[in-house]
Image (cartoon, rainbow, N blue to C red):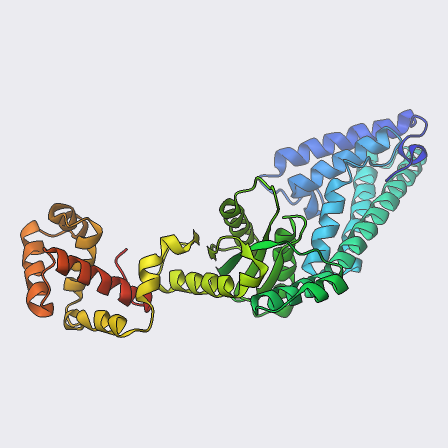
Length: 403
């Protein structure tokens, strides 16, 4: 944070102001030519970027007012340093880019001066060095603070606590030793999705960003196991909190999806006591796997959304019977598709025909063939229930569906 002395000094000379006026004219011209990317106007391609020109204008204004940057003006500097730390970029690389800032600013001022007012250029160089000093200090402080946060011991401790709780073990002694507060109740959010990141550095960056999103919940903290293509998150329920636990799960899933750059599927159990987390975790992980296996759209699912396929996915004699019911239709994919579309359109032959692009009489003929091949009538209650359950059982096992 700049001191009052650093922020403001005496007014600059008229010669300095004249150079800065001409510099602003150059920036105006660059703004006009930016879209055409005219390479001849400036030797520095960075100046074709809007954000760069904006920051150089801020620097010009600071020199004009004979001060350094304010805290608000330094915000993009801090954010850039933090992001670089998360991405694993070296501090020297970050500082090098900001040293170029000073050099380019001086080059542009010299070009604006057109060989005149050498004393004024010395004053401007002094102002640039003061700005460079503040930027350097801000970059180093922000970068180092973020690296300390990323490399701290707490995240591995949280993962250990999550594994203990999901294994049904008592995590209280470990939590006390780590100095981490546990909630009385957690909901379990299982996440799946995103491309598997094979580059170790990129994976660490993604993991750090995911953990940061999950940390935003506050205290008691979330406890997460983050893996390359999935995560299991224990989301605390605070006593008396007004937050909808399902809405929180949806928000976290959406935020993680933004971090990994692709849609993420989630499944969440309702809040349970710590001693019940083993069962809740197993349920959430099974539900998210079931949703992906069935080809469901990326969303956050609860048991109520998948109750029928969840039950039909149990390895029982009934499950095997239902799976075998449709075997006679395997050689006839058009019949399987017709049955699926017919059931999903509430037994409406007209809507089924339009969805398939065929005549309603063709739908009738296909339903008759299904009855003859399978021995179940898709027009009566028993046949509808059995055939619908058979389709769900097949999808729960990883089969495909028109919907």
